[in-house]
Every structure is written in structure tokens, then in C-alpha cells.
Image 1 (tube, rainbow, N blue to C red):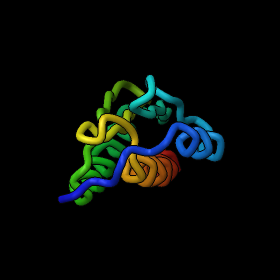
Image 2 (cartoon, rainbow, N blue to C red):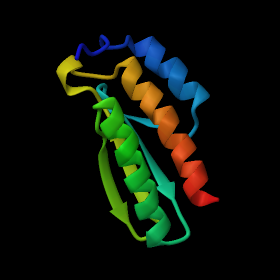
Image 3 (cartoon, rainbow, N blue to C red):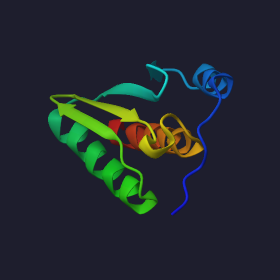
Length: 101
């Protein structure tokens, strides 16, 4: 499967400006920590995110703890961020909104 090309710095900055909560991890990744009322909801979020990631064959780094989950997106073979990372970050936001409800 061919991956999209690495995005220019300005494109990522524009995306970040429109998506509060996401921050850069160096030049090659974006991250966000989500808060949940308990461990179960954080875990449910992680499982749903994992299913979406598996379908897209693109997998984030995820750390889960009590009431929180941290997600990092990057495209290793592009050595940075691609449109796939940004699309899946938006999907991550939608999943988090459902898990928090």
C-alpha cells in the first residue's frame, strides 16, 4: 500500500491551529492526551481507536492510564506527518467524543 507524502510544516501548522488539543512532538509527530471519567472509558476509547487504525493499516502509539489515554500519530516510512495522520487524528477526536459521552 502506497502512503501519502510527508506534509510541509505550514500545512501541519494550519491543521493544528484548527484542531485544539493536538500538539507537535518534534517535527515528525502530533500528540494529544484525552481525559475520561474512569479507566473503562479510556480503555474503550483505545479499543475503538485500535479497530479504526487496523482498518486503515496505520497505527498510533497509545498510552492508557486511569482516566486518560495519550495518542501519537506519525508516518514512519514518510519520516514525518502525512494526510493519513491528520485524518486519523480527526477520527481520534470523534472517537474520544463518543467515549466521553
